[in-house]
Amino acid sequence: MNKIEKLERERTDLKNKYYEETKAITEKIRQAQWVKRKATFDAREKKKLLVAKRDEQIKEEYDRGEITHKKLGAKYNLSGSRVHCIIQAVERRQRAQRIWKQKRKEIKGLKKELQDGNNDTTPFGHKLATYDIYFLNIGVRASNCLIAEQIYTIGSLIQKSERELLRAPNLGRKTLNDIKYTLDDWGLKLNTKLYSYRGEIENGS
Image (cartoon, rainbow, N blue to C red; front, side, top):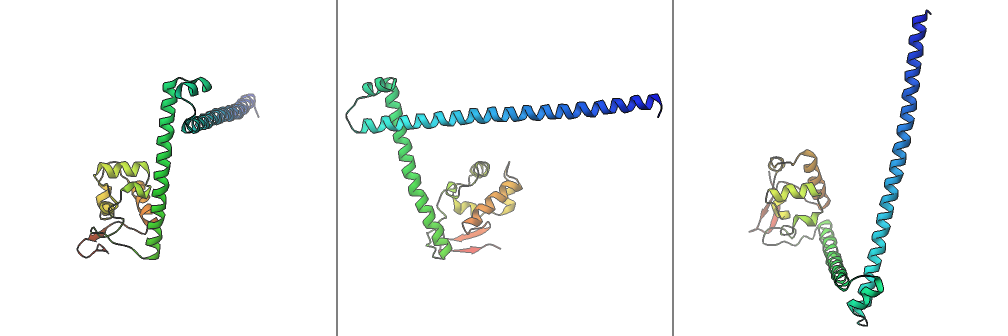
């Protein structure tokens, strides 16, 4: 091995060593950033839980009727108007939770009827036909694409074919598969014709 080849070999070794060291440092930086992001996220979530717990306590104390907004504000170091807003927000959240709980029971009942094959019909051909597409719990992108095409109900959706849906802007094959898998979970499929005068569903050709 002559002098030039030796120098070339040394340069290559130095490059490899520098690359490995740089890679190791980069990995350490990524790990440190991940730990920092996780700690920030955990702290934020902990703070949210503490605030939610405080809001619930404020609502409970106010519901007892033994204390006013002003006194509650003094107790929790808040203004009276802020206490009023917190109580209203908690009431809205509790009302939404009650509504969603009822809707979940309704959805479970409908799924059971579909699985048992005892499908009650409506004038539109199927009990699910008049329900909003949000009942299917489709992804946000799929829901936005369907609404943009003025598809608001399950009945309108299941009557569409794959080709018709793929013509919609921003609705690609991946979004279409998401819709198909969700419908399949409910025992439904695309390209289904609804016959209101016969009160039944027949698969389209």
